[in-house]
Length: 98
Image (cartoon, rainbow, N blue to C red; front, side, top):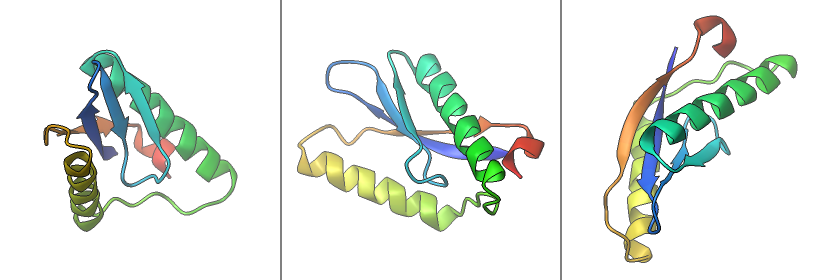
């Protein structure tokens, strides 16, 4: 299973990254690779908690991702930061996501 994540370059270097399909799932890293590894670990942790608590599987929709991108860009514009972000897909084993 794949989750879209949004990476935001920080003013002082590194990246903040979060997963729109899992509210509150965020991390960071000094490099792109580190940020992606850290958000993958955060996704796995949240999915494990959701499964343990009997919560329904996480569902990602294109609309939710697009809305989050709009929100992130608006926030960056309000803070006068460059409107540069990236999206990537992070893959986790399907059995973990259920």
